[in-house]
Image (tube, rainbow, N blue to C red; front, side):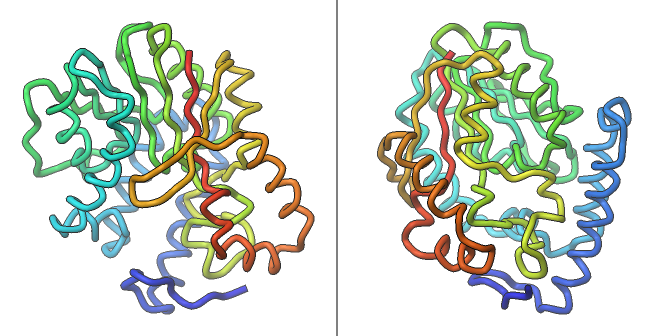
Length: 280
């Protein structure tokens, strides 16, 4: 199944195919590595990815201050409801740290965590914003010290075994009543990595895409017992019953891949998007 480049994609189909093969190669390294090997592999894999894929979407955004400003503003409109001046914020997968830098104006302390040093180069951080290069699953912060943990399109990049360990570490880092905000693409409307142009399942650097139902089950296993789910667009979101999303998933999941692909690109896609908030 091959689809034409989506709006905003600057690469030709030929270049997308080349980058797809690079992603599959790098993803295979992570999938086939042992847990011990993956502790050191995420950083090297993503550093290599940014070196070999010169038109990676993350690098394109970094090179456009205007686009970066729009994306940060959009995220802040949603995040503001969870912030206060005494909060301690941990962004997992901080990338170029643009959001973390903005957050430093609204909270007491920000920890910006990423597996790659390359993407965050060239930025001066405020005094209350600390950049941490991580093994991808652990964070050198004290237990019960973080008010809000946030990850935006990060969980799908982890090996499933590492995602569980990372989630446990996130839960342990939160204060009582703290929030983990997890944004990740729904596999029922995917794949969402570069393999969307060539395959029916994520086979690039999205090592596993989840449904709302799967993610809620995983959160409960770790210890989260209270959840909110939000749907919307451009920073404007409302709470929706998780049961509604799970019912929609069950319905759409009955269709074959080609039909599901089309359905998920209608306005229903907004209801399928995963923006799950677990409260400790």
